[in-house]
Image 1 (cartoon, one colour):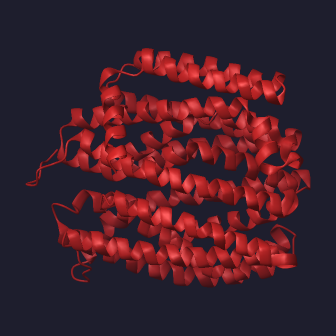
Image 2 (cartoon, one colour; image 1 turned 90 degrees about the horizontal axis):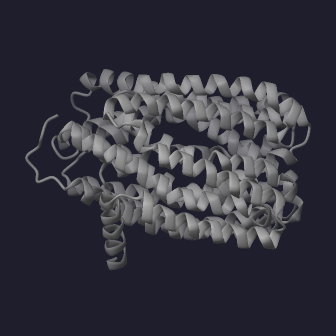
Length: 504
């Protein structure tokens, strides 16, 4: 570990700053995202929603190839050098931008040539061809935005990141409503057009925010002496990040493809979209906070003692667990009324799949912290090997269970493979942090017991009883966490976060 000449912020200050801004962004974006998803689901119905999800999944698949893992690389290296070596930071950003431009140019041509095959031969839905071609501008804008957001986080620009996220979320809602209202028979094309417009607005906001943050630290783009950076930038970081993404994102697409192939009904994809959307509501804040972990953990790992890094890692694991778990318990218990009230009775048939899906949700915040810590420690290839284990197990599970159990088979295969993945990853990190497993044992037992109760509430109780029971369980969990499970240091941190947030 090395130190710099700048007075470093304390670990708590870094953490509090990131959380206070991401909390505000989370509240705004989640509120508008909730309204948007409800309008889309109710307006489209399960079949059209399934087709819309297929389109988004296809764009996500191609964006993985076009992005080439450059966003994750930018976040990691910018966070590592932006204070100590602004010139090198400028060169890294320049090199990544050049790679992104080349990748997008070639990728856009390949996308245009492949969409006829994808729509006619893979999906066997010819009407998707014109919509996928119309989606090309959205794909390009999506790739650029996915690069700029991590770079802004790497610059510790959490406030401007919050502002851009919030403004985009607020403006996206009226755009979606216009698309739904004016779309008529071409409602999917209308949604693609307004999605492209929203992505263009987001791009302008991100460009301005990155420019201002770069100017603050004296970072300028430079085309000089870029060749020595090619190996560390692309081989050590971009390549393993890219390999991980090209396995993960295509697998997401493969899951949707298998649901359509084995069930012959796009409505199952619509059901998956609904339960995934509900999970996204729960995880929006943890995921938003996780986007700040790479720059924070990288900065601490390269500038502080190993004990500080270990303490920060454990603190983040426990913090995200405590924040996420009460909401997982609540939504799991009220999954049936949640689906019926927000998305309509036609989707209520998928409540059991949603309940099983949510049962595994608490694992995601843990994985987010673990994965970001390994990136900060320059263990990209090891992180990739763990992910390969997960993907192999998931593919096997999908092929075995989807033909027999449809959407239920998907959520079971996902949960079991993800549990093994997180367990292996966590055990390796425990050797590094030297944190005894007994410190997490009470949390594990408490979580499994409470999740099981919530699952039985969802299964056996009527809608009104489920709402009452879920609310009671939610408040009981909050009390038990605060009185028995949260440590004094963590209570102080939460109080500081609340105090700073209220001052804003």
